[in-house]
Image 1 (cartoon, one colour):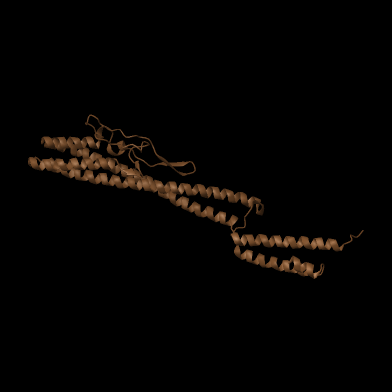
Image 2 (cartoon, rainbow, N blue to C red; image 1 turned 135 degrees about the horizontal axis):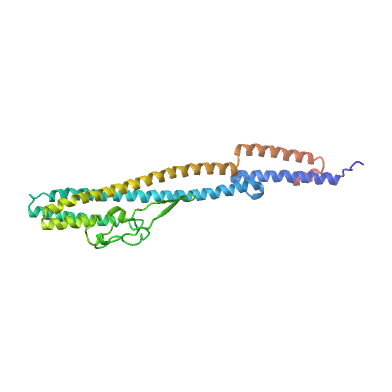
Length: 300
């Protein structure tokens, strides 16, 4: 039994085709306007899943990059102040060597002593250095000044400050004051750099040249401790810079994958839009033979 095609069926089929073509044109126009082929979940349910995943990973990667930048700034600042501390001790060693000479008159020893007193104050200021309002040599108690009026007797906090630099990857970026300047020594007999300076000052004040001489190895030991601390900072900086490069590469890869998933291909869009317009015009031309001219004009 053959199916009878009525005028109404032809009209209905024509309208369905016109609406479909118009919908396709609207979709292409939206992609052209936004530059994205994914504008709503229904455009590509699978693709939107990947899109959300890439966006999440890019956001996390950006935060890790910020953490790495902050870590490098902290480490660079630490390296700078450690370099300043080493320069102070270099000068102290020179002065102590002068003061150990038994031929110096008392006035010369007083001048040496007074300069070392000033250098001790400068070293204390360095030990109390702040970066972005945080004391860098007081561990997790970075809101508290590590060295007060009697720095040789102060114990700095040994807490570790960790920066997240990747998934399940952290880096401790701080050194405690005890690591850099020596452990606290209330009695003034240990290798704390402030204790060493106090003993040098006392020996110069008393004119005890041999006592000054005996402290020169302790000054050198304090300098070696600073050099070791700078080496540790350098090693951490190298690691962070490697992580920084890896995160930059990852950002490029994730952005590229996101672009392939979300971004529209303009060349293809222009071709598809032209094809769709031709189909739409052809649909109108065919429709003109089915319905009255006035109706086709109204629809177009």
